[in-house]
Length: 290
Image (cartoon, rainbow, N blue to C red; front, side, top):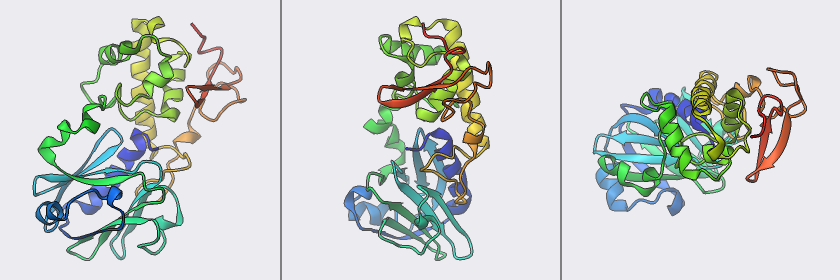
């Protein structure tokens, strides 16, 4: 599943391609991928101009002049592919559908624009969705109610991080960091990287963390996410940017998938263990267990 930098990279790409375009058709082959009534599609989607493309956590929000928005979650294998004739961009799970002839067997939704261009939502495993919803009521959706704050937002402080994580004082820090109801957008890659930057062992209990730990962790999360975003996201298997190119953050990763290599800070061998069912990378010297 994409993490915050990957989804933000996709958002930036789509923003420059589809904002200002008028939707004239909407086709779908699987109701769970496009769970919208025909009446709502006719009233609030067809004939409407796209006014903005924003992001909330790992979800994309395509705003419409009608006051409705298309909420998009790519889940594990989703893609958004724009075909404008001479201009062709793809983002998401890196299969041949990004550059091949569409629609294909993975295509779930096709949005047609007035100028003849199209936006394809492809999803092999059918877990993703594109849902039409009143823009002013987005915050009332249970999905967004449960979503924690964006760690790159201006108002997100180390005190906010501490308060939210301390609600689960008996849990290990890494799984709490990956809980989207605590903060949004951080997954396995950036949890490992952020904890290394903060010199916190991933199995440390929340109850053991001090103010200085939260300060370092807050700064590390923001640094790592910003660095990844500047490099187009990670090169993890499932995501590429809006031009069909893989991000290159993992070339700069300090610990993720660096097990048995030397820690770039102290030269100790990086270890990999399973924690809460996820592969977890850390330096046993820099990140001592409490």
